[in-house]
Image (cartoon, rainbow, N blue to C red; front, side, top):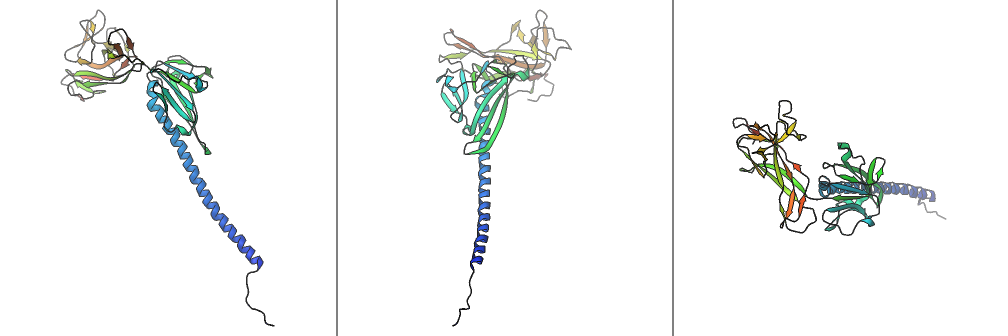
Length: 340
């Protein structure tokens, strides 16, 4: 009897081959899965980072400008159900609702861009009312999270200075007023205030000009008083002079001297009456309001102070906002160098 000399794989060899192939396939699968998870994690983190950043930017664009001019803010720790469904034009709420940060005003609800990745927000401001800078730093704490990938998180704290020193309302917690709902009362205010050359229409903020330049105050008046009646601008524009470009000076009627000339502002007058109006003619001497002692300056640092005022057509209603100071313009002699 003859035997077939052909040989094949034994069962042991086949098992070894299967095991080796399984190891190779498992390695490939692990590498692919690891790469996919790495990409997904990076993408999820990027989405959260972008969401938190866009929310903070949107808050700065839409809400922060009102914080700079409001006369009252309130931080509320309560359910959003306490917020009225409709509010007047001077009231604004910011709160977290259904996975988004919402700004509610008289026109309805507006979702802040990117806030679909926000898990929670909290507002805080120091409870102390002393007139110091640190007591008027408003903070918003934003907690970002991707619900599909819970490990993708980001916490961000944004600060905003309350330059207008508003009234602060809320419940103190460890020295701060804290809340998940922000209520702002925004009224009549100036959105911008610039000084221009009335003839050339060149903006003069922080520049030097020659005597004889007509300086014009240009501003945007924002009316958030809630009235629907026709109103006219009756804002009070006053002009002041100093020897210093500093913005942190007080107004005085004391006679200027070498020691205090750079420490105060003096109101400009004509015939003892304060100079008002949008345009200041710098021709001739500047007459300072120093009481009974007449004082004249030829040159100096000019600023104006605008108090926003709106009056109804019939004169029966008047709204007054917070005064705002302009930037400075240095008025020099005609033969002095100019930066105009």
